[in-house]
Image (tube, rainbow, N blue to C red; front, side, top):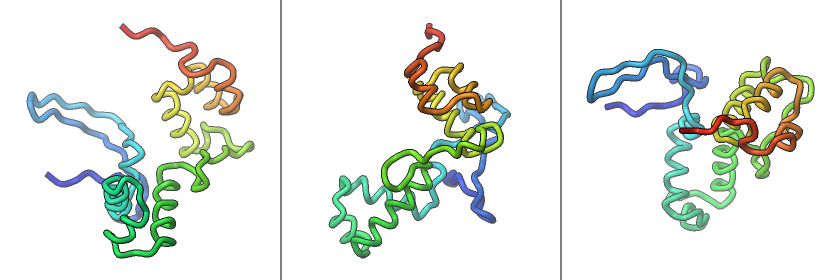
Length: 152
């Protein structure tokens, strides 16, 4: 079975899954399903992450296995960090004050990722999507999981 990639082979834009099927019973689901952060990486970036994790983040071992220099390892790591939606300096990128999450697909995806992980509540996500709240303000307003329904 071919590997799933999260990037278009023609233009490198992010792909979405529109159909899923169970191999056991044949049940199918149609819709728009977003891939996770690792699926956004190119094959080259996934190989780098695999080597990086295998070597427990020891850069000199990554250098040796891939036959590249320290600056190249750092550069590739920064590329992976950015591709996953983070700032290469280690902080999540700041959201532009003028753009609302509703008008910026990347910002909307970050808000939905935060909602899915439980970092923010549904009300906080809605406020962010409508542009009536900031990520910091929303988190401070209710904290992680505030306003979430209890699971059975």
